[in-house]
Length: 47
Image (tube, rainbow, N blue to C red):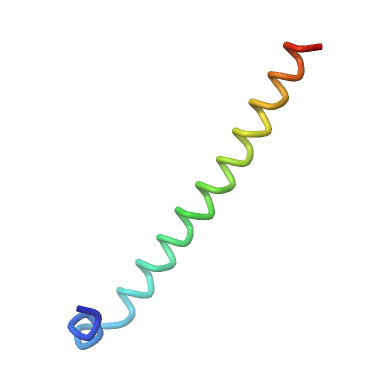
């Protein structure tokens, strides 16, 4: 499968990989922020 894509053109594949990396890192970052927000809310409710 990968050999087929490579014969086509690598530049497009590289852009896709960078886009996926961006989505993953953005998702992790958003998840961390969301987690911190939830923890802060729970702490405020408990206090």
